[in-house]
Amino acid sequence: MRVVVQRVSTASVSVGGKVVGEIGKGFFILLGVGQGDTEKKAEELANKLLKMRLMAGSAGKMDLSVKDVGAEVLVVSQFTLYADTSKGNRPSFLKAASPEEARKLYDHFVKELVKLGVGVRTGRFGEYMKINAELDGPVTIALEN
Image (cartoon, rainbow, N blue to C red; front, side, top):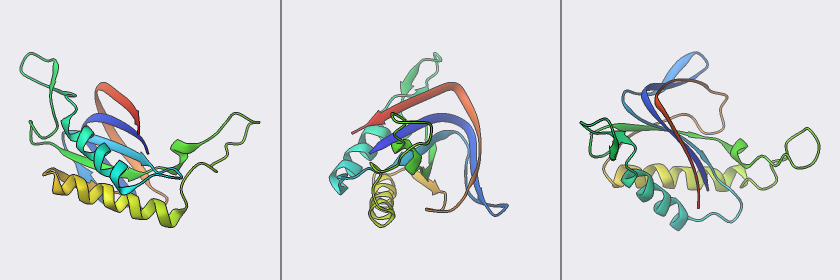
């Protein structure tokens, strides 16, 4: 799994001109599922993300987790995180999981975040989405497990 997490002041995702997910302060998460990814990997990644100290504390340093500050997360599926651009100018997505497998693991990842006690909003899997995010910092971290 590949993830890009951005600390945001606010973020929203729209489908067909209608907002389907929106948060205030928290994490905007793009999640890519690759071939061979598992539910265990999804659980480990969810746990790691919620423990990451990327939120600013009273001294302005990144020393608090999203849970510590009572923030939420907005999760959007992003198969293009598995783009292979090593040959030519058109990306290949052969390393991405099939849509069926990716949806299963995306849903499992979201359920795990909820289980771990954070407010979660989502985009719509497989839909064309418009995203608005006000980055805070900016803080952007890429993870792979």
